[in-house]
Amino acid sequence: MPKVSPRLPQIHAESAIDRVDWIDKITGVIASLLNSQIPVQVGHGLRAPWNPIDGGDNQYASSESGSVNGPLEFDPLAFEDSATSSNLGASNHENGLVSTQEHERPIDVLRTVPGNDACADCWSPDPDWASLNLGILLCIECSGVHRNLGVHISKVRSLTLDVKVWEPSVMELFQSLGNDFANSIWEGCLKDVKKNSDSIDRIQLIDSEEPNLGTLKPQANDPFSVKERFIHAKYAEKAFVVKNNTNQTPIGIGRRIWTAVENNDKRLVYSLIVCFDADVNTTYEQATRETQEVIQKQGLYDNPTDFGPQNQSSCAYLLDSDYNGINNELDSPSSSTKLVESIKDEKMNGWTLLHLACYTNKLGMVELLLQYGAQVDARDSLGRTPLHLGVAHRRNAVSKLLLSRGASANAVDGKGKTPLQTAMELGAVTDEELFVLLS
Image 1 (cartoon, rainbow, N blue to C red):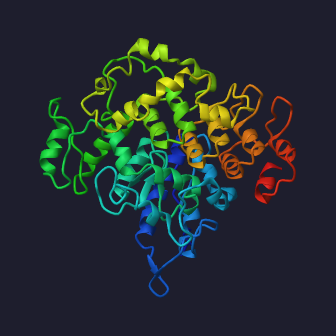
Image 2 (cartoon, helix red, strand yellow; image 1 turned 135 degrees about the vertical axis):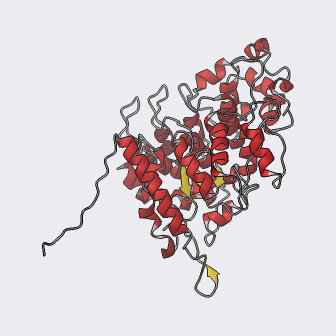
């Protein structure tokens, strides 16, 4: 009999983007199947420890190959799987982070954040997936919809399999946000609805073309198609974000986001990005140019209720949280007196928000800005990148985070110095890992 060799089917994608998308979806299915079989209890009934340095116990080792990241142009988080991404934990305490305990897994820590006990989009209990840039936890079904939105809208990762993703900067960001807060922004226009309301009635409301009926949130047992439409409207169309009814371009947003970064107010920065499309690459000059007179001339903040009926929601937080102090801040030649005093010897001309976050040594804020597209190698008026600024002020954890996200170690400033040369001017680089990364 003739020997028949097994035939392997070949599938060709039309483009590199399609190929990465296919791999991403197949990986998600494999990960979900593996996830359902991972034991939670090991040994003598004790939970396996999660080690922020080596990525955890061997039971999670398969996640390194179970999560496929595309090239940088498709997903900036591809850098997270580098060897450097798992070694940022040593500087947790020096930066005042709300860090995880050595024997706690990321999923256990993050589920304690308000609202994180249920999926952000359908209330399904015990979510074990997450969107890195949105700062929310998701059930596996909703995470599949998020993957289809594209990484420019939502970057989906597993809480149990993608162990290297959950580095200190990401953990700090997630602990600062949470499902409750994120939904107060993304669902600001939704009517209040109980978790156990009638699914059929809610589906009819979603499908209805009557504007007065509004839209209500799906629940765990609703059809997939309902969840899919809701999630697409919520994030891709921003259909439920409270809008500015004045139909004017918001004035002073650059100043607001600059001050928020300075004050390490991650919630305000997140809100400004979502509600007003604030520019995460805002410069010092742009922020200081927006004076009090311009804002008052536009009348933007004269009546916070102009932004809709949800004036007691998080959009009121946007308008009122530091509204009382914004007038005084705008009169200052710098972002605030505190910042002027702390960096009086610094020249901030050309600084971006990322420069500011690196100088103030706020790891979670750096993470938030990078998630939303901050230029990692932006240069100030002296040619310095955020990495130059980080090493010049011994912000080791921040500097390593920048390098893990693609910052150039070979960039030269206006004096022709690389970040390593800048660091060596302060003496020996005692952080061996940072020294290797800069070399």
